[in-house]
Image (cartoon, rainbow, N blue to C red):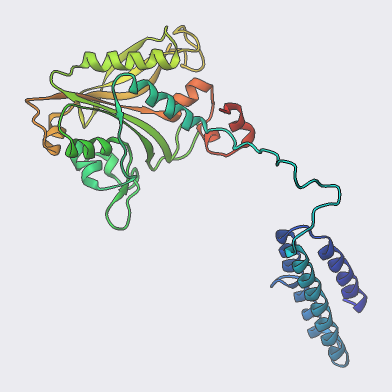
Amino acid sequence: MHFETIAQWQTELTTAIGAADSGAELEALRIRALGRNGLIHDIMGAIKTAPPGDRRAWGQAANAWKQAVQTALDARQADLARPRAAPADFDVTLPGYWRGLGSRHPVSQLIERAVGIFRRLGFTVAEGPEIETVHNNFDALNTPESHPSRDQQDTFYLADGQLLRCHTSPVQVRHMQAHQPPVRIVAPGRCYRRDTADATHSANFHQIEGLYVAERVSLADLKGDLAFFARALLGPDVKTRLRPHFFPFTEPSVEVDFSCHVCGGQGCRVCKQSGWIEIAGAGMVDPNVFRAVGYDPEAVTGYAFGLGIERMAMILYGIPDIRLLYDNDVRFLSQFGV
């Protein structure tokens, strides 16, 4: 390294510093020059390898270089902080330009649409915390100790023994503990599970739970309400079917399919040639859940269902990968502008 080299560096840096337009750009130049691994590190290292007779001159040159760069940085920083006067031809009396607030996220749009449809059926909205107790998330929902969903590989547990809810069903537990029948609620919200992110799974997703408890509620009420929801959301020709399944908190339990609105039930890529799309898990509330919240299972019956918001969004909008909903790509999200 020669004295000419550090002189050249000083010229280049002071020129770049004088042209910096922002604090971030200025900070990047400071790190390049004076950071731990910056140019000053190379200059100071050259002192150690210089002949003993030249080290004094090298030290003086290094200090002068550092002081010159720091002075240029301070001056530009002060200049950037100084209020800038408006150009002479700028009319300050003109109204400002309105910048739009952006568009609503497709998940938020779909939650609002779904809630609006259920409100027409007499449902009200209930909410609950995303950090839940094991009792509300599992015990009160008749989930046995041996159930795999309790495992740490499936659920996010916190240091204090609580957890991030893995469904919005705890909202139902809290609402029933605080209200006597009849109950008719929907509970939209975030849920968390230890899923590996891929095209159809995410560790963070949204559900909308539904609960209807009263005298003589039947599976026919469940099918009728979900059929109304399907037609209101996807069109008047959509059909609904129930398939037997198992969930700890419902008995009997069913999975709910809607006929594919893309192909009309004929079979396509979206429905994997089956003509049907799985939308929800549902069933009649298990008597043990009623006992856990203080209801008399001999006096009331009820149904519950859980709809996956992201899955409905993917179907409704033709989204091939769930991760697109969370990449914050403005080009993608602007397509759903409302």
